[in-house]
Length: 124
Image (cartoon, rainbow, N blue to C red):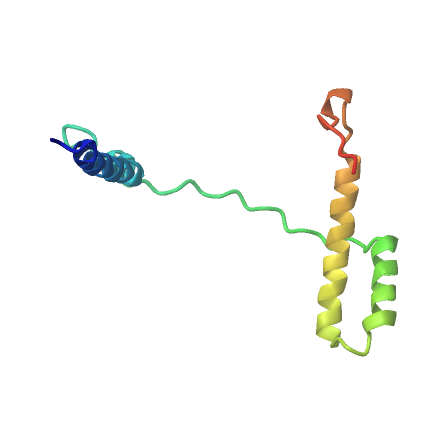
């Protein structure tokens, strides 16, 4: 008499191979699509290399006067950490603070419309 589990062993082996096949397909699918995009068009016609267009020279950023808020932050930083940072580090801190203040000003300048509000409000 046949044991019902013996027939399942064959099914398990096929399930195992099926799973391996599916995993292989998922692993190689991105590679196949990349290789398909990388191939040349039929007929061997390829575009000749063209020089990139001349980039527009960006206007040199003019030194803007530091905002009073950034100067205030720098004064606080000097009072708290002045002994622990070198003058070069402090200059970098001042530049970073100025950049943060300018970014905050740009963010505040954006006016939100009524439909730009968040979809939900988190309440803890």
